[in-house]
Image (cartoon, one colour):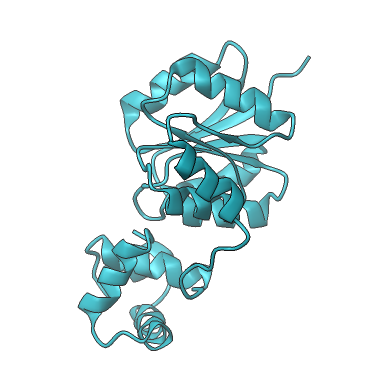
Length: 210
């Protein structure tokens, strides 16, 4: 019987190696990535069935990366393993296609359990989150209204700017011109009704884009 193919994505080398050792007796790790942009660019060719991903990663955060990956690979299962205990972030993860949400201080056996469940088609939320948090995630997924919708490219630009990159640096990373980055920046400012770069970055942090 073939083992489930899994990709790991986390910017902490020690953790990602530990995760690989933890799950490999039962699952096949076919790729490991330390940033969101590389994950989105490279994971589809590896054809994983599951991607274990952190929420906060450089170049593209896990929520944005997960959204892009579900567009590229609709059947892939996204399992978030993170320190973020905010129910709004968990709810957003599920809205964007997550199958499971665990915390990094979960028991090691819990991750294996979650992987087994999602491969059988069942969602999973760690019991380490309070019942109120679980309720807000499970019952509020369709009812909640998120922040104004940005395009995938706008989210990429906003993430890089929020990380302190210049428009020139962001343009180099995204393989576009600085003028294109500036265009996206000012379109976002108009769309979000913010008047300055500082307010735009403040929005990025509050909405977990960065």
